Length: 162
Image 1 (cartoon, rainbow, N blue to C red):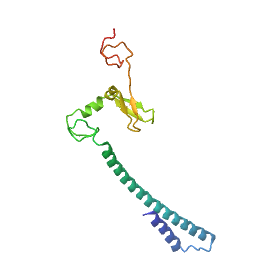
Image 2 (image 1 turned 45 degrees about the vertical axis):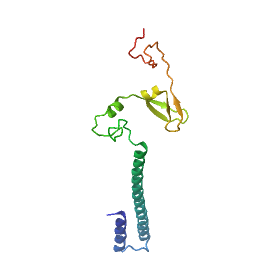
Image 3 (image 1 turned 180 degrees about the vertical axis):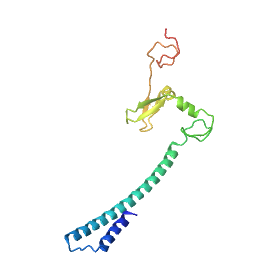
Image 4 (image 1 turned 90 degrees about the vertical axis):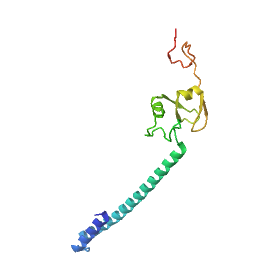
């Protein structure tokens, strides 16, 4: 039974009981039933509005998903399949293993303040373009150790530091 049906039942009950609206109590009960009727109509309108908004939100979510797919496209660089980073395909390429094992570093763009994740390969290139504001971000590393390996990372990698 809906809230409108319940209020209609109460209205019918009050009329069936022959409540006299000339008495103080009768006027009070009829006024209460009138207020309940107004509240029930308002609640029903709100429920309809929420259902409509929910439907619109679902459509927007679907449209956004399509736009994200169109904008970001395939993230897989191996060209062996049409998968993205979190796909469940059964290809034997190195996509998933590389992404899981690859160490990422967060860099903050000084121009827009956007946080960007970069990997070692991107750092080795020396620069990237900020995907948010298109500012050129340059990376310059100097070896802090007396490292002869030429890597320039100062990480203490597998070279002799003697």
